[in-house]
Length: 293
Image (cartoon, rainbow, N blue to C red; front, side, top):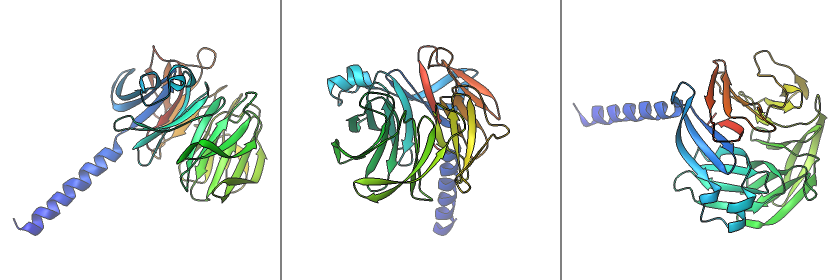
């Protein structure tokens, strides 16, 4: 076998290994002071195969107030930078960026009743501060300046954030409206569009596969929002229930979602198309997300 053949074989093996790793299904689960990473395929029956966990109470690189109080109720978790980092937010009053490898906290900031967090271009970070005397707004940070709030805009019961790279827009969900913002400077956003959502109590906001639609949930159910037309519609096969806390879908079509069993939390993460359910009996689960869409 020639060197050319050897290098060619190595290239094919590397490509196959990369494809295999990318095909693995993993998902994030957050609740209480913890964020978990679960391997879907290695899980058996309803027992999740947890491969990684970050507990804010054990994060020695966080200030004591963040460890003991501000991260007690984790409510969002998103993978960024090709899965190398995790965005986390807590309704107890904080947001952070955590490295997957080594669990180092590389950013943290106080955000009243934080309910979502999103990475923006230019080293910027947006956070949704929900109902609170100091909340009900969108907040903008520079990752290099964690203690400085660059910009705010009032949004009652701010709950969801999605950065649309295709349109270079930040979408934000409040109690009764969905908004679109543009970055107009390194320290400011500008409201471009606003739509009234069907129903009240806007909660979950996530991109749908394909890049032209958003999933929106509110008190009474779930919807698909067509970004091009500005229209909301019910969609066949979309999980639909009251107070859906999180909802996402892989390109293959499988949904992941959480619905409260007691008050605002659940002890299960559910899937549909195909259906499956995992139990987390010792965790007040709030949201669950596909690790990489």
